[in-house]
Length: 178
Image 1 (cartoon, rainbow, N blue to C red):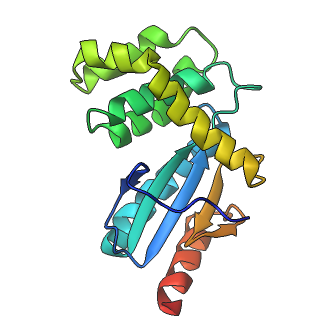
Image 2: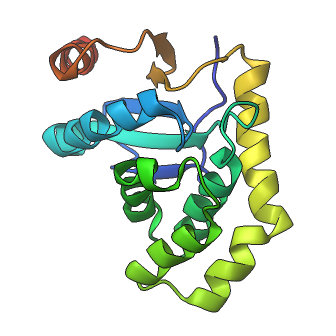
């Protein structure tokens, strides 16, 4: 599997000059993605300057009723510089919104993050938001990704590591190889 190159359009945290780039294709309603979210956050903190994280949307709309809307909420937050904060809220509170009408819940999260509410509401439903997410999902499908989360380290697909220590070792090995 060859993933699209990282670009300035990607949602990223960490230095562009980091020795390791971790790309994650994820769905905010996916229980496995929720399980990995704190591990990925810890990796980002532990590897600091050596790790750059890229988040790419892959909402599994065929099995998760709020996958697309949650992605739209995260993208709308990203347009105000609060993607990672919304990312954390969505995963931490997944059980609160995954099986119900979630729009008002996501609007509440935007208020909690002190986002500009007019802009958030407009961006939440904007065609450009939906197109950005769909482009990411279509790219994932085109390279053969069919589950979430899917991780790539420096462009190489890795099987979802069993736990934090296994994930950490994969990254350490990649750093040492560079």
